[in-house]
Length: 106
Length: 363
Image (cartoon, rainbow over all chains, first blue to last red; front, side, top):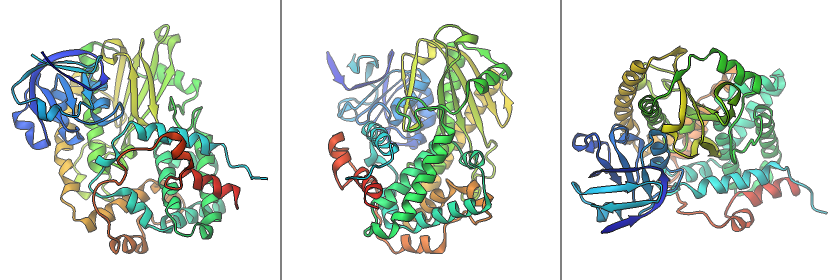
């Protein structure tokens, strides 16, 4: 079982399909219930963030954009994994535990 | 004997270090905002000193001065950027009188308006208990469901995205504040707390004429929850909730330009705002470096827009400010990758705290 670890930024557990996102241009391939994976999130990703079931980032702390947004949306978030955009691929199914700061590849 | 320095400097140092430690400054903005501020070489500091002097001359009372700032996080950020400008002056001695007067003014107004914790180590409160009771009484509360809370969260995210699109990394707080948390247990039960999310200045056509068709200028989201601890760092939008917000939210109200929305209207409004946020996110990206410099200066000045207007002064950047930046070599990114430990932060001349203390101790 592969587990990525990072900072627990927003509590909760959710499962979904990975979508690697680098900017607003990825909106057309992002569906409701996908797991948003990015180096860092930006406000231009708003439509995708509002659809996401969880958010994972390579970088960030507890007051970076992904963390703040996730807590407001009530979705799990793990930031600061360092390697999420490298280790996770589009279409992978993952479980995100935002309370523990863990991402499990299913 | 060493002269004393004002107590706010120590509180500022703790708050600043705490806040910056949890961010990624290196990802801020396309334009290096810190270098931009440093390049000003006191020009903006002098302009604000002139603004303060004008208000002194015309006798503007402090309660009005407080209200002329958009909200306290705007004031704190403007204060910070003036401190950074002072910190980077090659010859500070020429500016010591101006700097002290300006910083004393900003501290006085902030102190007047905040109920407590003026540098936001934990909370961001400006409302008195009486004002909170009035808000509770007149607000048309809707009992929260997880779906409604999530919907209000999506509205908040979309509106925050507008703020970022129009004000970018150094100034999003102009359109984004969170007040709280306030104890509302008398009305909502033991442990109930209120936060007020406030988004003003959402249609700044003065420097973005492209946004004239954006339908809203101001949004407030009132949220009551229990079993959650709220705190924020330096500015209200740097919010941290300890505990899950969605299942613990008890009541919500959303006000757009003075009108309270139904649940269905919240969803429709969110979709509209999210669409505009995506569109407006490209506005800044299309700017040349020269245009970005001018935009940065417009944002700097706009923090004081109502104070300028009340003083009968032009709020816009002066030609001198624009020319100084135009001639400077300012690149992209923000030159701070990480923060040093706190003791180094307050003792090193690379950072602002030691210069602030010396300003008061040595002059």
